[in-house]
Length: 136
Image (tube, rainbow, N blue to C red; front, side):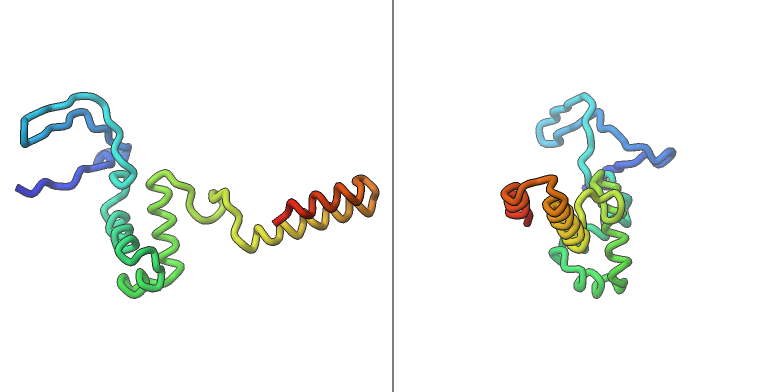
C-alpha cells in the first residue's frame, strides 16, 4: 500500500502542522505526543519538487536551468523561496553573510579607516600594522 506524503501545512490556514501520533505497522507500536515535522515537510509540493531537482543536479544551477527550462534568476528566486520556507535565511537583505563584492568593499573601508586613524595620530604605527595584519 502506497501512503500519501505527510502534509506539513494546514490546508485551511497554512499554519505549520504538528504530528501527534506515530505508528509502526510491523509491530503495531503507537507513540503519542507532539512532534515537530522536519524542514522538508514545511515545503509546498512545488517547492519540494524544485529542491529534489536541485539536489539531484548537485546544486549546479546550469543543470537545474536546463532540466526545468528556467533562467538563472528564476532558479535563484525558487531556491530563496524554498530556503525561507525551511526557516533558513535566503539571499538578499535577510542574508547575514555579505556577498564577495560586499566583503571586499567592507575590507577596503576598514583599511581606509585604519590608515586614517594612523594619519590623524589616533593610533600608533604598531597598532595600525597589527590591525592591518589581522585583516583578510
